[in-house]
Image (cartoon, rainbow over all chains, first blue to last red; front, side, top):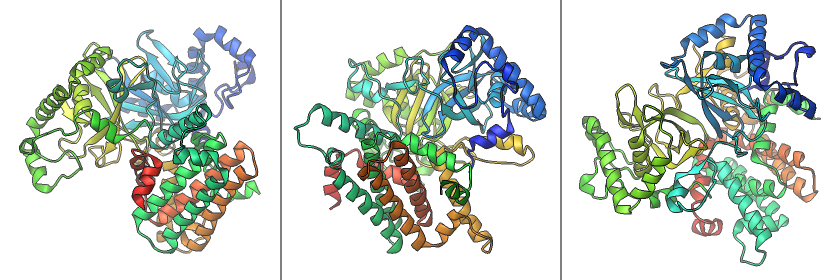
Length: 296
Length: 296
């Protein structure tokens, strides 16, 4: 599996602050308790320097300096020494935010595993989360074919946008052109998450207007017996595309049915698709059988 | 549902070239036959101008000019009149490429529904696909909270990268630091697609080395009966989390099992997750029951 949080962490900076006395707060398990937050906020101005220095130190210790230098040399920095850096959620694919990185910001991101940018307005390094504590925990970094654009692929600790929105992209041109007068905040959702959002809206509508003729999604949301019979039926139909050698498009269609009905079940259980994908990712840092045995 | 290819197309430019005589090739159904390709390549230099002019015309016809102007005025263009524009696959969430847009590029994208950028090296408008015919069909456009970063959320006709790669992001820093000497091309894959890639690798390994002790994934790939019994079993277990009122984490775990086993089944059938999500998206342009009836 390409994405492995553990492989990246083994490789670079398994511990940002190797000695406990050097640690302002735990970077390892999102274990940010209140007293640590206060300490961190007090020292906000020094935090970036500290992250950078610690990152440098751990890179030296791991002997990765020359490899990282080779990599940094290969980036086509623009006339201001910057490249575009895009933070993406490793589980959902959502584009969280976009900033710019200079050489130090990219080096810091690689070694600290916290998405770090260069703030053009403040002319300084800026680790996302240094104020809000909503860090973006970077699992891998990707460069594009031209080496002037970077993806920070990672897992956010919380909402990325300073407004409290999950991502910074919530103005839909489609919606604006339809209703320019309405203050709208539609996140840029890809298919699975649009479906999730629609199901969630149907659920809210049931609670608001109990009596109207329900849509199919609402009927499923209201009737666990119907919902479970559909989930089992669609899984069976998916299997039959294999057993009865049906064509590819039939298999895609049945899988879409499985996904849709299972997503309704998840909505009833208040489980987000992102939580499911996180479970899936964590399992795949181990081999299937090893993981299966560990659950027995 | 927020994403609706039809709603965006109804809204802006239902037909880029309203008169057949004006059309170099069909923009509507990816119907790019060979003679059209030749015409297009011959006229490459004029294509951008034509797309821009047609887009302008259709916006005027639809009376959207002033709304689009308001929107374009709200973008914080930088000192060169540019903003970052990121093209993202509406079904998979993959970041396809990143370029820059000026006012004309964004206006053209909105009206033509083809991802269009401003090429800094050529100082001209550039519609992705004007050479390769691999257009990115934009379903919606999003602006970020600062109004200086844009997402073109759409469906690519084919590989986006000029190298033939599906996306432009295929240099993994993780892999480079492990094996700097190996020429590697690992796409920036999010969880579901990493799983898909792993299953696909296992499938290839079975074909290459038939005799080794198979992993759990390989056993499933080799044994349809086992695979189908697991898909049915996991769907049943997911339902039981609802019927027996098990906790949320159990539901997430069972859904991960359903997804994993169903993804193996899709691999056996040679169906990509993207195809399934496309089916799902197309269904959600209609209401569930309406769609269900249309399939009967």
